Image 1 (tube, rainbow, N blue to C red):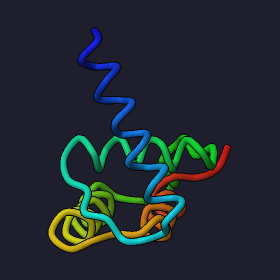
Image 2 (tube, rainbow, N blue to C red):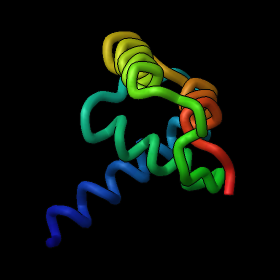
Image 3 (cartoon, rainbow, N blue to C red):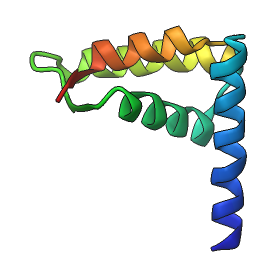
Length: 89
């Protein structure tokens, strides 16, 4: 339990650096998922955008992984993903 709390605290610190510095960061696996949950939740996105096929969703995720994990992504990239993949409440 303490380990999970410590992981979340570290992630929040990393995300706050990303937001404050607005410098691109490399985010992979769990870090990327947590970042998306944080950014999409921050802007109150919830349900998947109507009309997106499974292929569209897979392509969006693959592009995000390629950008954020293999290169670097900025807060703007994460926000664009949220706007495309999810709709606002």
